[in-house]
Image 1: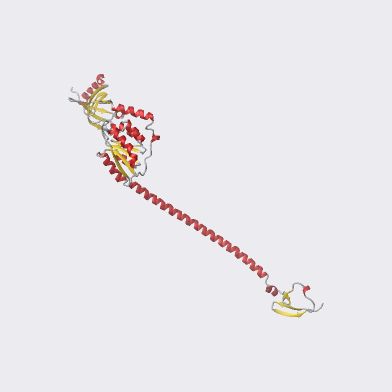
Image 2: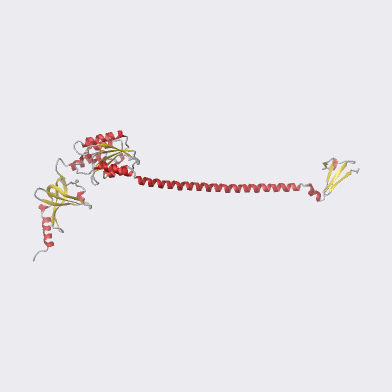
Length: 369
């Protein structure tokens, strides 16, 4: 009876995965057909002049592995397996070591660990980036795509900022010294922010940004430094030393300046808030004035009523003192020489007196008792 395809495939898979000689095997070759998948897995082919081998490195192992580039010569350690859906045998890579002039990845990790222990990357040492920079010093190659992307982003987001290019060698033997000189020169340009950037590349291409001298120059620079080196997955020693790390040169420019449209929207909202606050203040003061007006009217009315009451009392007292009223009641008034006599002692026999009645006056002479 013939085997089915799956039966034969899984039989071969079992043979390969159970063979001790094919587990933990080391293979050296050149990287090609490299793919960093969105899942975090890495797929590539190892090849030499006569053959090629499919490889897969799962996310957990890829996180600890050096960044790969097509054409890299590497040595990998892993387990042979067979991917049944395609019937392809493959190497499941667990470790990667780059070949060539030393192990750059190990150098990177060793320098990172030493500077970390020294405190060079301490977050407390990070300088704040100005929210509204006036001038930005850009340290990068004058001919690369990075400077074009940065300038376009700055013009689009915040045209008010001035950009000053400090041309640097960003690759090759002179690169680190060139970057250090530019960092020392940046404060003399009158800038208040520095962008240190370059486009993507292999670990070797970016190595100038992994030099200790560059990291120390970043920390020695009195201006805040933003790095935008390589692609999003690239991280250098300079990124750890910088005050702010951006994933790309374009992202570095975006972090360096605010967005004009967002600022205009914020200003418009602030204006609306001010107008609302001013209108509220005016309405509140009007309410206070209305309250004072009501209180003044009430006080004036109370004062008017009090004075009216006093006038009524005075009028009543005046009326009580009106002689005509008394005279109408039958009382009379006695005058002597035109003066009111309040006592009989002032009148003697023979005096001429005048008696005032309500309806007239009568003269008489006092007779002796």
